[in-house]
Length: 513
Image 1 (cartoon, rainbow, N blue to C red):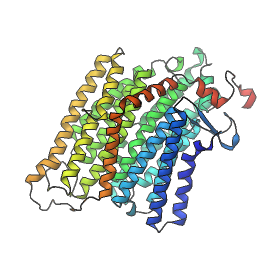
Image 2: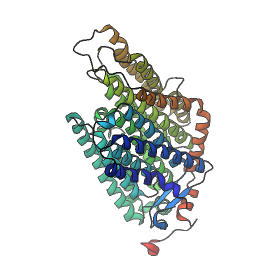
Image 3: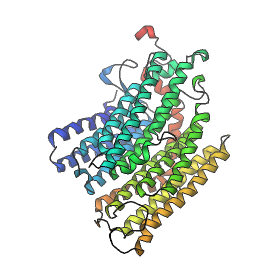
Image 4: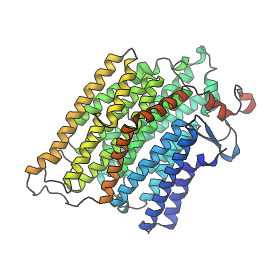
């Protein structure tokens, strides 16, 4: 049992209270410890990716209690990749927050930031559905504090809407967990996979209800239409670096769908027959279409990016809904791409907001550093719209190729290609309005703050885009890793054997419940 597996959860969990208790009034000390902790998370995440690259499944049993009775953390290719992605994103967002001094505009930013990282890391590493619920709640509490950071009535109103909608999802999650436990007597994912497979076709009603409820919960987290209403206002009103960190939050929902429905409720299970093709795929295509239409119709730059996130999640879920190793591999590649591109766009929106009276898409005086910021926006928009040569183009090609092998290839190709065209027009309209038409407007009452963007803030955005370029250049190697990850997901036997430590043996309720 390796203790490194628990480090991504324990480290931010220890840093957050330390920052509150020992460095509450010293922003410089908070920044040093927060940066050092996030750098350590990157090193740990890279180590986990290296350790699991050969297919090894790592296990950590809290208190040395074996599953299904104890709490376990499990590391495989998928969870290690998501931990590393979160740590890298966290570092660049943190650098931007310090450079733009967003972290100094309210109390406890760094403590909340570390609690947020703790919740995200825990959600990716947990091997237990109840603890997935617990980490979802940690995410919710910390994200609400970050969302209302620096105050404002609009931000508070959006935060309340965000919390209420996600509390509804938490309630559904508890109902689902209750139904699953009533049917199987366990919530450990590996043990649950064994038990769900033994349920006969005549007794699948309860477990099918639980599977549908879980899909609804994860769809809320992933902002799937029509459960997306909380996202546009919440992300648009959140501080720029907070919204950039939230780019990984919707991916938690996608991760949960992949993890739960490859291991516990695979498509060949009687209880989940038709769940993806009948329900998830149409909703995902609708999310993609409405998200990109929202990009075209948006009247403010921040809402445009928020709708782009909905569209990108639609793309991810379209790929997941095909539920083949090829499509899951494509979805994983696109998850990395859309996280980096979405975070970069939110930070660019924040840079634009520093030099404009508002983010409304109308001609105003030029922003400070317009040449650099417009170049960053152009690159990020190309990436998000899926144009060559950046990683979004490769991601869409992979998803289109996966769709070509399904019976609904015509519909999938039509929606993806049409939505890509709409996204290009929407981003082109926004960019020309903010950066090009601004040259013909004289400074007046609409002039903004005229603050020059901090160099470190620009470097953080540039880092995200540089990673997108690296994802393109190294696309072959990354995709090979994603194929191996998908193959591991569709063969959960080693995962189950590692967690239960008794291959082929199923404990009965009489033995422990």
